[in-house]
Image (cartoon, rainbow, N blue to C red; front, side):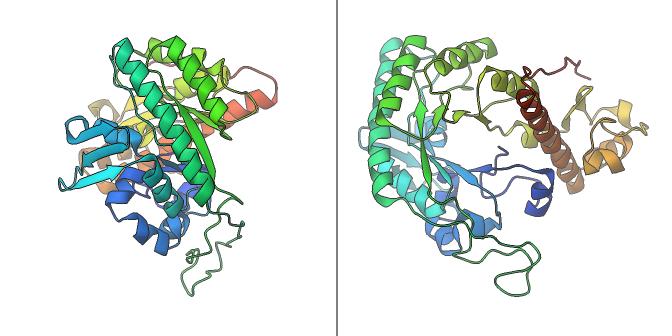
Length: 364
């Protein structure tokens, strides 16, 4: 899932995003709550209508963002008091208010409000955090079941606007949500495999249509991330979506898909694009390097994306060196295309009964 934190996947407009083919994108409750505000988004058609995106959207509960504020937050049983990173104003998130916000944003998939455990953390801290997340999961589900929005799919033709002369614009009430919003639970437990097992089993007891593995990519070494994911997967039902939050490189997403992960998100393809780091079938390319100044070759000769089919490495290097905005746009289109093509390859391998594998390529 490409990450569209503020109702936008940075560096690419929605029509081009549709063209390269993500089936679902992610937005963030914390950031949208602060700006432009949940009520504004709700009145303008929810996230689908507001950002004119006709495909599914998943919203993170805001728990990880509040966790990352560290000194600007205070956690207690009721919820979390935190200060805005924008202006320092004080706010409060609880499982109930997070559900209310996500329902108002109109997401198709909503995440339970959780506490992300920092790394490293001692056994007592990890246990207390896991227990709090479980209590918050039960509260999230209770509120969600009482207030979830039930709507029907509405087809919106891209060539015919429902609101006048602007093709593709989605009017309030015309956003194409699933027949019923879905709430996923989140497994925590730090790096403790026994707690991960307990968290998974008790989250399943609460009951959700999908389960996420949270609390990773918080500073732990990669081998430990893999160990925790592998151990946790053993205890999650294989017949429901299993979502690994905040991962990863193209190699990692192939590896985790082979292990049984169904959904992943990461800011890496878009963030790396803005810094000139591009993923290709020949390895990673830092397009800012002088070696590409006279390179007439396409970025990736095996890539069918519009960037590789049209522009040379020399031109992409020139745009980046000149600090042209187009550099960020083209780099983003390519990186997202590469990630999504990688996932299509994974799906093809699975459909053929093969194990998905990523070919080794050196960094350049």
